[in-house]
Length: 338
Image 1 (cartoon, rainbow, N blue to C red):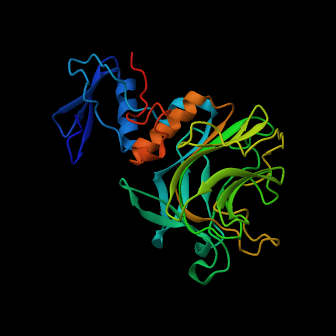
Image 2 (spheres, helix red, strand yellow):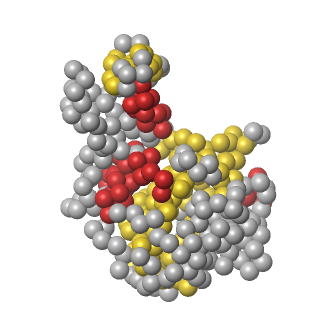
């Protein structure tokens, strides 16, 4: 049973021990402690794909838990950027001024250098507008579009040092050329970076950098407009790249690299760095990004698949999941409810 639409009102009624969640004054959605009911309401606010399961027990004995979200990753979730929390520029609602973190780290991605170099909002995907990067020469400017983390000088937010980390995101590829385009970068000297470039055979390939040394993936991007759910990072010192549409990690991304991704740099989305003298505004990403999850620590295969399933069902992109091996191809991951 879906929540009645349009969803005009959510009410929490009751006391600390026993409360209920009601929609539109009359539809009962959940019952439990006040803390539990508020958590369900929060998931509905932050996850627009939330639906009351068809086998929900209306006598209050829940058979299936609510849809899993990255909030279940705990303290290792260092930054979670959702389309629902993109803030427009005060003077131009088409420009993204900030991307606000929904973990407890309080990181904000922004661009205070120029409105010409800020990304814009994409067309809506399942009701949410993502980040659109148009690369070089946007609005008569020779600079790329990008966002960068606002404070990487003193915390450990998305700076794992030499430890394990992962970044999962939903991307829609734009134009790719022989000029390398950077999707993610920890710094201009590429302590860590992910880029795309057309190789000598004319294929569009993803490259992963650690310590300014690139490894080219075996993953070929078929055409502009192709969506992918990617997870990139380091585990046990080994770099990796997962495409949710494959049954295993990309075999082209190999090698142990303990390059220190320190807290002395700002982290960039959409470019390698702004105003860098050695790139001359030519390496900005072209395409759309809808959601990014940064995780510091060793991400288990189960949690990676949870993230992939969450993204795929939220944005109605389940075709991006591997048909034979992905556990959430048909149904989204769910939290356990006692």
